[in-house]
Length: 454
Image 1: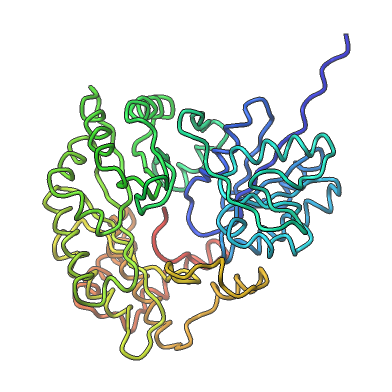
Image 2: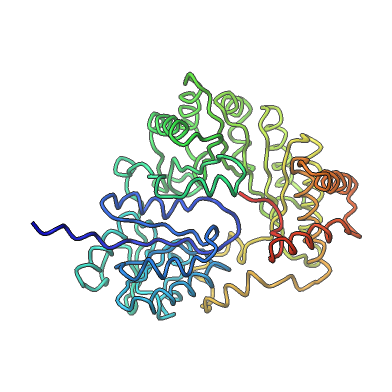
């Protein structure tokens, strides 16, 4: 009897980017391909990701990757081109935010055969089947191809059809090592934050509780990070999930994200229920307009007070944008950060440069650009060089002031000085910042990343 031929590998790639959040989108697609030999390569962890992808795709039918607008596009384009040269018959498929919003730009590069618009759990297996059969990819639901018209976004499959994420497909120990702890990312719902009917769904609370139990036992997880936008869209589900975790014999540590107004809408009683169920930290994204003045600023401070009263640590990510006349979001974020730290010394207030387009701007309607144009927009410094220096200093000192003291004497000294600087608002003449950055460059040969990691 002739031995059965091994299936060709399916390669999925996460381009280089800031942070080390687990590629849950790629994991969702990979988990649907139970009978395939799937390899996920993370460009943020591999020393030579391009070489590894090239070696893997020599016998592959498909290379899939997820891309967001901005800096990751450059790496995605380089790796896609290298893979295509190594295997001319390879089908290169992009998904993720930029491929969904601007598929035409991606297809125009000549190295991308198709873009998945929307969810990829259903679309990618169909692409793989067509590629193996030698059929064109035109006309597949949720798949944009060169020359095709407008493609409607593919909705995620209903919750009862979604298989549990197969975390064994990720090199989890590498993520744990980079993060400095056994912190696992998880998604319990899909959809947008607006909470409109039909905009998303969530797994039943009993399924979430059972999966959380299994993940903590199987992977010896210390903290679960629920990485999703729609967690607080259904407050009844939040209550049921928290109560289910509270009723378990063993308490699990977990964290979740929210907007300031969602914290207020949840209320003190619900936040205390979350705390009792094992939630220890709420990650709050604060856009620039919410820190300037007026009611929006009071919402941020009120959210901080509610979290403090519920004994929950708040991590307020304060987005800032380039100052303009009458609008200095960096100075406003500085004031709000120190006000939040005065409410609770445990609060974290990282400053983050705003993304390359405002959240209320529809990138689908934006003027067409090359992929390098999006990269340049993200990498471009602020027009005001002085303001750019102010931003870099504040990112460094707020980050160091809120880190653990550290084991080495130098770390303790730098972080103690940072706490003094933050309390007093003194960020000039940062000699210790220059020493830390120079030392990091001498040790690693690369510039020290600013701010916090995921």
